[in-house]
Length: 94
Image (cartoon, rainbow, N blue to C red; front, side, top):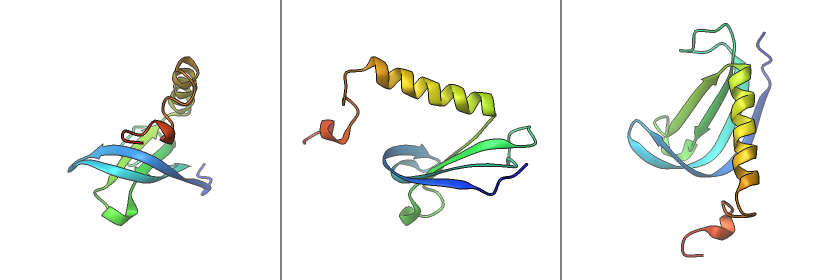
């Protein structure tokens, strides 16, 4: 069932789309009918930079299990790394 609930967050990073790398400024997460994945509903994650237009977007359509596994993998990778290693304080030239 589509919830029509969308979580939107500001992010700071980069993504690679059809035209190459671009800066990413926001992400949305929602559950809806997928465009491509062969399931009735998926957890959809869009990473984008609206200021650069529609080509500055990376989209994921994941099963619930895959979305939870991805979240767990992110937590595990961060927990295994030295504290703050991927923070804005580690920016090159900072």
